[in-house]
Image 1 (tube, rainbow, N blue to C red):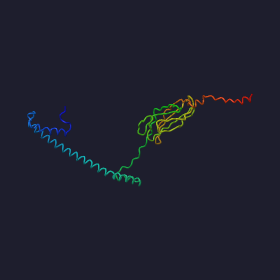
Image 2: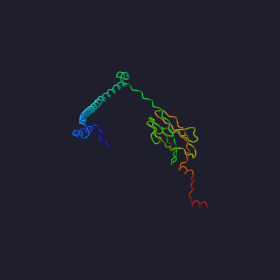
Image 3: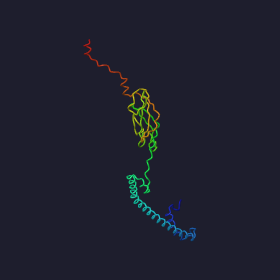
Image 4: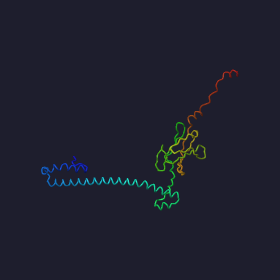
Length: 244
């Protein structure tokens, strides 16, 4: 079981409240009067040092608060003065104003790098016969958000499709999402259609992905129209009698 408290104030108070009892009969407690007298002196010194430290901490806290207040009062007009100097340099088209004020001239913005090509593209056919494409892409921060998330601020994904028998691909859609549904895919049973993806940002394009091939079945409503035979003409009894 722990006897001495853990904190300094409690430890000082521990000896302050017990030493008066210890001094009544030191020998009966197995102590000498000299030991008790020494503990009393050391306890008094610890109390004085603790109080001095608390005073310094309070003064430091007040000084820190005063510093923060002074800096807040300085920075607001100071920042306004810097803004005024920079605006003057731009208005006068005179970069020496910045140098005379010992203020760094604004740097040219870093060029936006070309985006990375979309990765792991997939294609599937939904219940309506449309083609749903999904992929992974990275935005300007390089974060791979995964399917269903956005591709990053300013990033656009271009979807190309090459129909059966076509000489090359053509653009069929653009999106900032990481998925796209093509509702205009040709209804050619079993014929492969090729999809290619490309990312675009700030006028710079990524390399194109490898083509994704998918065989498109006939949509359910189209199949019904193709396979249902024409209905026979309605029976006309009067026409039969005239013919007879």
